[in-house]
Length: 72
Image: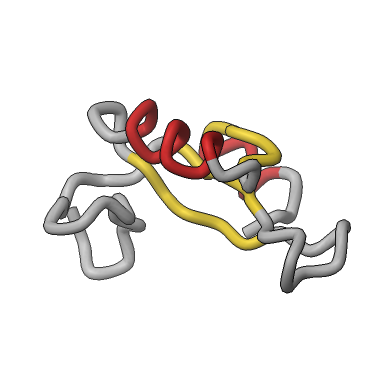
């Protein structure tokens, strides 16, 4: 893993990111705005649930696909 390898957003995790969790907080963001968290395989479900129960999660996409689509 290099210094430029995206890492998981889970607290204390240093694993390489595989997933992009696109989200927004409708109380403070416009509907089209997307913030992102990165997730490794181990933390994807946990981070998705955290955002999902708050109604923030909008999409979960493979990091490779996100970058190919110009999202990153």
